[in-house]
View 1: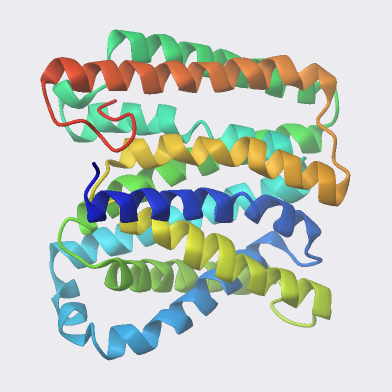
View 2: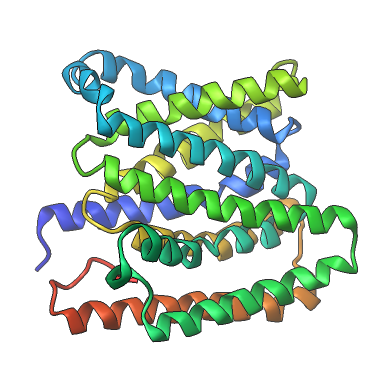
Length: 309
């Protein structure tokens, strides 16, 4: 029987996946610039967490001047890059394609583990097969967009950069969460991200106000759902599961977001892109399988979800 911490982690991951699935459809629905939405979702989440950080977690916040604080800042930088690329991709292209491409994050996470954690932490042979499949799926799916419009191609490139940035964000977050609580880490990370996005919006002349009620409601829904329940719950889980595991679970956002976009926004994925997206999903599934087998051969404890890529 699973322990209480394991059950809590499973519950947190379940809530996180459901919450982040609503992000892309809400971004596409909101009548506001993508960068402005990214700024507000991080700023409002930072404000919501400040009473806790300034109160019960005040002593821990003082420790952020060291290495842990550096990891929080680096995670915030990577998160800002993720939002600044993926969120415009959702508005420039389609929810299904942008979400599928950003879900290549586990592939980049595996490569990042090879670089940052040493040779033994890199992907297994089976996982490399999955990586090749996933990249082929990306090429197939985005190749369809070449014949659609230049805007669609730009959206695909932005989504892929967003996936790479998300891998960095999760990797730095795993290091910060080794010693910091979820609240302190997310407060510092979201705050850093908000400041960077504010600078980008001001330099780029992006309007941060003047939206209608529907748009503000969408932004608040993103803050409560995708940000506080989604990203924060994933950050909570990083204390017990690896960055690669979290990245793999985010893949479940693909069908969730596509279903919501179809039911809510009437966005039906193009038939020509479906085979490529299927190969992409299959490739990431093989990456998961390769990581799980590596963990079992190593003789380690059974992971909460497939791990060890």
